[in-house]
Length: 251
Image (cartoon, rainbow, N blue to C red; front, side, top):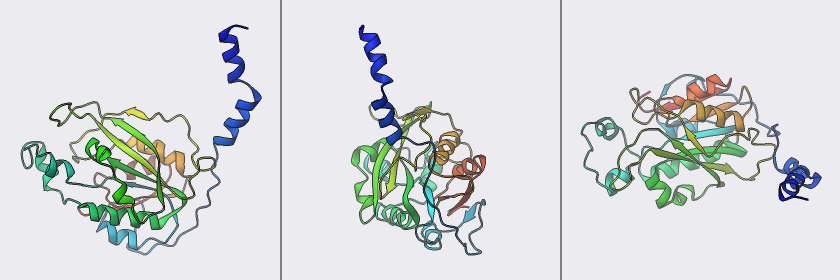
């Protein structure tokens, strides 16, 4: 038997097929409860309110998927690029900044409202990826289960290499499992998607976020974003027939 034939035989063996079926599933078995919302939380709108207040109004263990794109100061404070308040950095520096303690409060608030095995998609830059985000997760039942890289197609700051990517850390509330929870299996861990920054300096890719929403929720489910910024998650949720709940200090 040739090496090629042997490889083909191995890849289609009954044992391999059984293993694949044990790991992957194109259907979700997660039970999401029906929820009653206070009148102040209007679905599918751009709410103007504090994110922690927003999270406090949501019922416990009721939401299958959340996004968080924290407005942190790590790069501005520690690397001191010198462009804060100038040129392209003007809009970014004018935004309310989150301390590490505040980001931790947001993550704990999200952990409280996620269903068991629910997901949080946490956006970070290279600086925070290298420094680590473990302190943000203290006191939660969230575990890191994957990582995606968004190639923005444009380059930004950097003393050495110029940054053209951001990263999405995939976290799951315990119990951690993929089968019956994650139902889309053709999403690559590096995605190229160009996004206009005209509306918001931290706009995120709608198409990628939509595919992630489809992977870990069902039609009609709620998707939350307590620091919505450009409200790209709202657009992604509506495109995939999900209900959005989210807010931003600027509305």
